[in-house]
Amino acid sequence: MIDKYNKVHTSRRQFLRNAGALALAASPLNAIAASDTSEGITFADGPRPLVRYPGKRELILVHTRPPHLETPASVFNESVITPNDAFFVRYHLANFPTSIDPETYRLTVKGAVKTPLSLSLAELKSSMQQVEVVAVNQCSGNSRGYSSPRVFGAQLGNGAMGNARWVGVPLKTVLEKAGVLSGARQVTFNGLDKPVLPSTPDFRKALDIEHALSPEPMLAWSMNGEDLPFLNGYPLKLIVPGYFGTYWVKHLSEIEVIDHLYEGHDAYFMTKAYRLPDNDCMCVAPGTSADKTRPISTLPVRSFITSVKTDDVLPVNRTIKLKGIAFDDGSGIKTVDVSIDSGQTWRAATLGNDLGRFSFREWQLAISFKSTGSAVLMVRASNRQGEIQPLKADWNPGGYRRHAIESTPITIA
Ligand SMILES: Nc1nc2c(c(=O)[nH]1)N[C@H]1C(S)=C(S)[C@@H](COP(=O)(O)O)O[C@H]1N2
Ligand SMILES: [Mo]
Image (tube, rainbow, N blue to C red; front, side):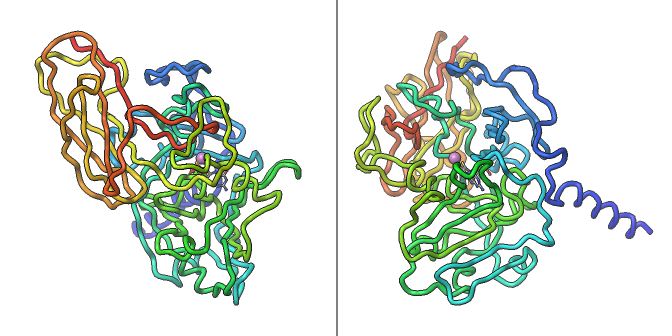
């Protein structure tokens, strides 16, 4: 009886949580009036409201159609793994799925392959060797709101990033099962979301064949030990560790191997959007555009203080434990230095547990202030390739790939 009850109970709960339906379709449960979400930043657009979508806690609303939600900064201080209900959400196309039946869902693998495949979720989960990685998903436009001069596009704070444990199968294994033909150049990825109008390009991305056949990219169905949250790409998502989130295609349904470089109407998000100036700094003089561009690719090294926020008041002559995170493209964090005097002197922080080279890396440092007044905290990370955060961010027209030391002005009292 108890067994039976438990089983019924669990499967009903599972159903409610995981059946691949976005309860109440795609509308927010409630929008909360603008409150404490400015996080010390005054974006030209003003303070941003909090909103609740199914399966999510209150997140910062960027816009509703399609859902675009940012993670509040406090979440990054709670844990080094970003909880599923707090993970940011980004869509480009208004016609995105609101329910997906895991029984009838299929992943198609086609194009320049020996054997085209149509794989069910059950087959994916059972017929191949599973792998696991902790990796950061960061939107190319994360922190765009700090671009100076200001650029077009959503004025994002630092909440379009998150760190999760992904479980799935290597993309390589699936491609090898289909048998990639010689002459293959790229692999394209499409999800179940669609444009509303035929004139709008679909959201499709491409990886070079060498990258697609490397050990890292994976097809994940599990995030932090649960099915993927619907809004984060249920039931399957392409994970590209070290690369910006734009490649992490959600609701993945179609993989095509092609013998040329991706082009045409539906290659828009490779050939027109998500591109950077094709030079060493990936930058141009503010207000100008680049003659030549290339697709955005890997994450620069970044670090944040999570335990203190802008305009906090900290006590004088008291030991304070500062805490934060650092991450990069998978080269691995080497050092994190902190300054409490606007960058005049720096001290090495202690790195926390290593959850893998693609993960957020925690750091901490005990500090104390000797005098009252205003102060600026700064944090600067370096990685094993010798990359270091510069003092000033380079500028590009998309406001992509922010790479600079972050400052937190505070008061000591
Ligand atoms: N199918 C689909 N996948 C997508 C997108 C999209 O619009 N449609 N947006 C991409 C972009 S730009 C980002 S930043 C990430 C966001 O992932 P998340 O919503 O799970 O946080 O999804 C990527 N995958
Ligand atoms: Mo993005």
